Image (cartoon, rainbow, N blue to C red):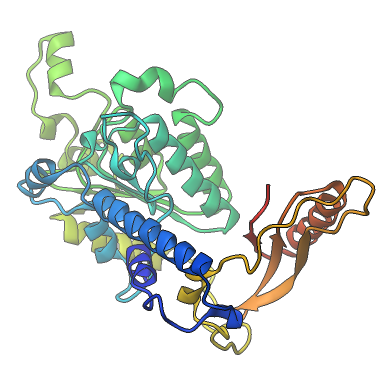
Length: 367
């Protein structure tokens, strides 16, 4: 289920009078908590919907006038029908640059640039989001498919894009390292890819370019004219015919976007990737209590004062192994103050999970 649908289902939970969780009395405190959480979830769903609108109606109309799909439409076209897509950091850039809106950080991590947001250029948060996706892909041994429609770094903020170790250039470092490690790096050029946007398809193991819309160059025709006086079209400077037939930067010529995405599916099919497991590790059952009822959990009694310093501290955390949908997971749950004994216990359990390759679930309620 897409994240937006999951949040929508969660926000549209049962009425306030529904059955309590763990037979908890229906107290005024629970009514207050459930109402407050319902409002927070409704706002979250609204913010996610707003982020999915991209750069606004004018930018979307201009984008579509060039016979170009929106980034999430491109992702839908390339995935298996009915396959879920987990979008990372969908609210990246939220209220980060004041009145300068950057919905979803201008990047849908799967990875697809959103050209309706500042021409697909990279803000500092866009770089962080891209690097996070590469980190996840490397850890999970996943190939990377870059749907590129980007003008490179956002020039007014380039001083913030290049300053540290995890900066714009790290994207290409990761791309080279992952390719060397046998993780395919594939790119589809769907628009004008300038400067930093040109490096991704150039460094990819294989790349596809769309005729007419797709271009790759470090500087576009206006800069060429300003620097040399030469007048050249974008297509002649870095179009599909040039890069497929002359420069060799791209490998596959696509007539349109849907053709390009179909070619990308073929590239994935021939990448000789290890087969993903099709069966869960074990049989599983639905949880005892519906997840949406957790929205109303509230303390049964007022919080008690902290124990006196002379009293032996209670361990404020619990750890253990469990299963979710047949997948083994380690669970760390805590409440109260994190003391040294609980921290030692938790760190040992986390090391154990890392050693065994078991994913961790943290249930946090701590000072």
